[in-house]
Length: 273
Image (cartoon, rainbow, N blue to C red; front, top):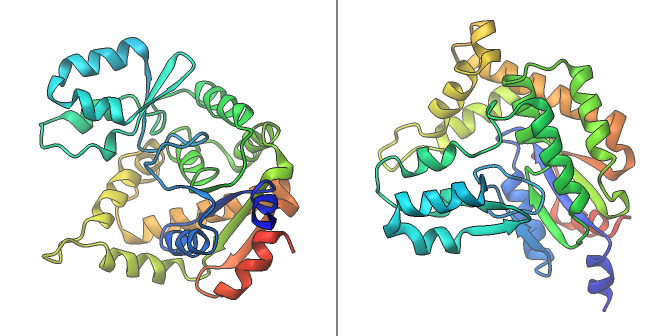
């Protein structure tokens, strides 16, 4: 009974720069609180749309007609929200050429929507979300802030203002954000660069992240080209996110050292003490 009361209080959002240990923290909380509904990146989430297609019914039906052999997989990974279908297309394993690239066109990030359209979609979903007991990974800051910096090139003040409007739609009494702060971003980025390789030792994560930065309007404008530029971007993003926590989220956010938190501390954090 006590767990149910606790579950009714919070939705927990885990945030932080890449390499600060978000997945590790999420796993530790999920093990401690198996009653919580876990939403990792790419899962269907009631508030976040990273790695998901945001499609009209017509677009969804057309995708089924283009890929008839994947119709069952599409249906299993499609979720209806009003007049829209959200498809967790990266969860569909297939070797059909171009499938993932095709469905990627219907994502909302990477400049595919105007700032106004992006804000309308995100605010609408947060406004509709009234459940509790969810554990989210990168659902409030990471993907939105990246998009606003790299593709829409908003200033810090404009991003903070965006989040003031967004946070106005959040049920604050149910909201708790755990932010992993990294004071050695160069070191942590180098670590995940080496860790996230294929079985042959070929780097997988780093080339994609660097391409994401260098090919964005922000990256092209500043001539970004290498490791130091990526670390500089992470420092800038962390600065923006900490300002959002300070000026917008306030007491509903707890900042943890990325490698310094202890499992025994989670009990107090999750119960609000």
